[in-house]
Amino acid sequence: MSTRLEVWAPDGLPEIAPGDDLVGLLAGVLRDDPLVDGDVLVLTSKVVSKAEGRVVPADDREQAITDETVRVVATREHAGGITRIVENRLGLVMAAAGVDASNTPEGTVLLLPVDPDASARRIRAGLSDAFGVRIGVVITDTAGRPWRQGVADIAIGAAGLVVLDDLRGQVDSFGRPLVMTQAAVADEIASAGELVKGKAEGRPLAVVRGLGHLVTDDDGPGARVLVRLGADDMFQQGSAEAYSQGWKDALREQP
Amino acid sequence: MSTRLEVWAPDGLPEIAPGDDLVGLLAGVLRDDPLVDGDVLVLTSKVVSKAEGRVVPADDREQAITDETVRVVATREHAGGITRIVENRLGLVMAAAGVDASNTPEGTVLLLPVDPDASARRIRAGLSDAFGVRIGVVITDTAGRPWRQGVADIAIGAAGLVVLDDLRGQVDSFGRPLVMTQAAVADEIASAGELVKGKAEGRPLAVVRGLGHLVTDDDGPGARVLVRLGADDMFQQGSAEAYSQGWKDALREQP
Image 1 (cartoon, rainbow over the protein chains, first blue to last red):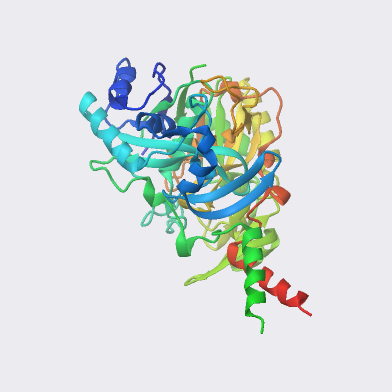
Image 2: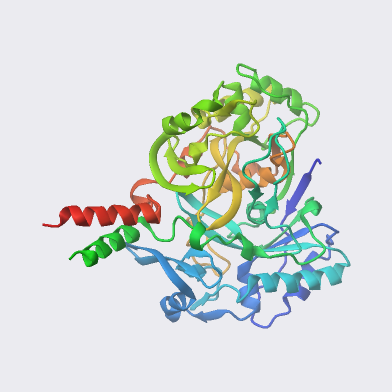
C-alpha cells in the first residue's frame, strides 16, 4: 500500500466567538477546496473551546488550572512563578492543565473543550453531511514531552479515525511479528497538521488527504484511548515528588 | 505563509547490508521522482544502522542494551522479562536503549547509529551533490511516550534543517508574544514521515516536500538539541525508582 499525503491549511476562518456555528464556518472555509472521502480534518482545540464558550477571565487562571486538575504530577518553581504539570480531567498530563493564554482575547484564558471526542464527533457529523463524504476529525493541543525539548501537537479529540494503528499480526520484512504493535497515528496526524498550521499565523485547521485507510465508518474510540495512566504509568509523579514522598513515608514507618 | 506539504514513501530500497553505499542506493531509489530544493528526506535509523554495520548477535541483546545505557531511568517486570527504560549514549530515553529486534536478519539485533547527526550530515551532503539541490535530512526512530499509548516516530538525527522552530518574537493573532516558544518540528516531520512509511511495508524512507522554509544552508545543530536532560528533566527516574531511593536515603540519614 503506497501512500501519498497532501497536507494544507485553508485560510479564512474568522475569529471564533462563544456560540458560533463552528461547523458552518468550517464548511464555508473548506468550500473552495471541498473535502473528499477519506480526508482528515485537523483542528486546533482553541477554536473548539472558543465556540463552546470555554473562556474565563485571566485573573482566574490559577484557579482555572486548579479546577481542571485531577492530580498534580510535578511542580517546578521558576522566575515567572510555579509550573504545574498535572493530569487534567481528560486524562492528559500537561503543563497548566492545558489552560492557555495565547490566541485568546486580552484578559481571558481558554480551557480545553469539555469533551473533545464529543466535539470531534459533532464536527465530523456536520462536515460529513455538508460535503456528503466520510471524513476523520482530529482535535489537537500542544504539549511538552519529558526528555525532549520543544513542544509538539497531539490528538486530544478524534472521530471517524483509527487512533491507535494496531500492527499485531503484521510481520516485519523478515517475516517476524512486529514488536512495537500500536502506532499512535492520531498523534502523528496532529503533528503533521501542525507543520502547516503553525502557531502564529491564525490558521487553526489543516486538511490531511491520503489517509483514507485510517478513516472509519463509525466514530471509533476517540482520542481518549491514547491516554495511558494508572498501573501502566511509570511516571505518575515527577522524580523529585516521588523521592520526597518515599522519604516522608520511610520516616513515618520508623518506630 | 501558506504551506502545502506532500509526503510520500518511495519504493524499491533493497535490504541494506553492512558497508553498502547507502547514499548511492538512496539516490537510485529517488531518481524517478528527483529531490528538489527544500525537500526533506526522512529515513528510518534502521537502514543507517545496517549500512554502518551496527548489527550484533541476538544472544547478546541484554548485554548490548547494557552497553548502550548511560543511566537506567525505570525498569518494569512483565511476563516476557524486564523492560529497561534508559538514557542511551545519544541522550535518548527509550525502552531497551533503542536496541531493536524487528526488521533485522534472524539472530541479530540492531544498535542505533553511532552518531545519527553525523550520519544525517553525510547523507545530506551525498544527496545534495547527487541532485544538485539543498535538502534536509531527518533520521528517525520509534519511541514510547510517558502518559500516551502507542509509539510515535521522533528525530534522532538531523542535518540541514531547523530542528526547533523558535517562535520567540512572533505574536499570536491578538498581538501578544507566543508563550510556547519552540516547536519540535524535526519530531513532527519524523511523525509525518511515519504516516507514509509504516513499519511493516519495507519502505524505510519518505520525502516531505513543502518545508523549504525549514531547510537551512548549513548543517545546523542536529537532533541532539532535542534532548532535554539534566536540571531541566523532571522525570529523571521512574516514580517507583525515585520513591524507593527517597525511602532508602531517609533510612540512611536516620541516627
